Image 1 (cartoon, rainbow, N blue to C red):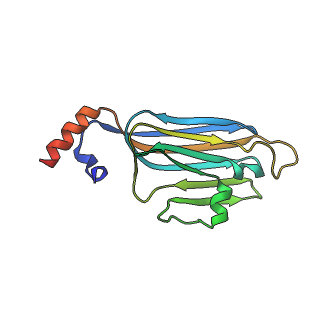
Image 2 (cartoon, rainbow, N blue to C red):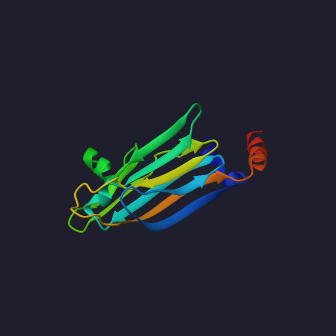
Image 3 (cartoon, one colour):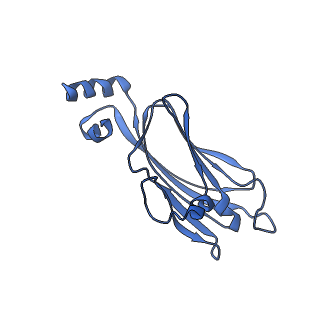
Length: 164
């Protein structure tokens, strides 16, 4: 309910990052860390340069009411399930090409997922080659969008005003 009211509320902002990079086998990178309440809106990722790029895992960690809510997947995982179009779960493949070694997908929840204290996104390369005979760097580009509350007290005041 509150997400739909955001245009009428104060104390929040969109947080958008576009991060390119390269991974070697065994690398893990933290791409985003937000220490505030908010909503996860979407993620898009692209990996290339190696047939092993399809095994690069994305890990999204959001605090939940009792424990961390974790989403972890790779282009290979999503492709294996046959998720090639948007659907209610939210993860789908937009490109999966072993010839050009390009893999892309999105994670767009049908409803924004709330988090109360923290939101973390990591990207992890496979520990060793799976399909390549020699290690090759894996290039990536990741886009992450959230709505975060930057002033909790101002946000609460504006919610009270709306709900009077």
